[in-house]
Amino acid sequence: MSDQEPQEQQTTEQSADAPTRSSPPGGPRRSSGGSRGYPRGERRGRYVPRPKVCHFCVDKVKKIDYKQSDMLRRFLSDRGKIRPRRQTGTCARHQRHLALAIKRARHLALLPFVSSQAR
Ligand SMILES: [Zn+2]
Image (cartoon, rainbow, N blue to C red):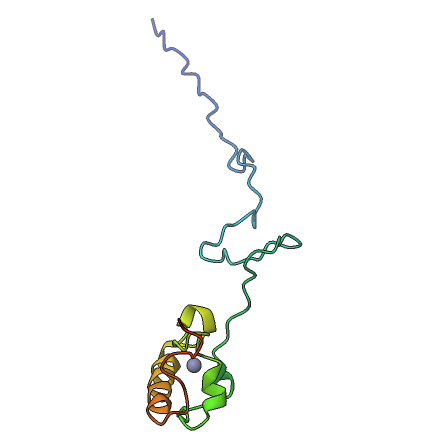
């Protein structure tokens, strides 16, 4: 007796291009680090950040002249202190040169060490 079972070949044909994932290319991508967007139309007298550009890099200043006391005065606070980089937007290199120039100008009495209004 030859009872060979007819091996049923299961049709294991998987359709290769089954569109199971429904993620369109170029979806909403999140770029980290770019969270400096300004809220549009929503400023209620709060701090409004301005685009910070180094004043000296724009003018391509190599050496900051300590004799330009009027220009250096913009980088002093009302108390006569050197304003920090986060307020003025000056880059690190120019902030160093600026601080040196202000100190030289102070020594020559072109700039105040402290404001006259200080109590
Ligand atoms: Zn700079």
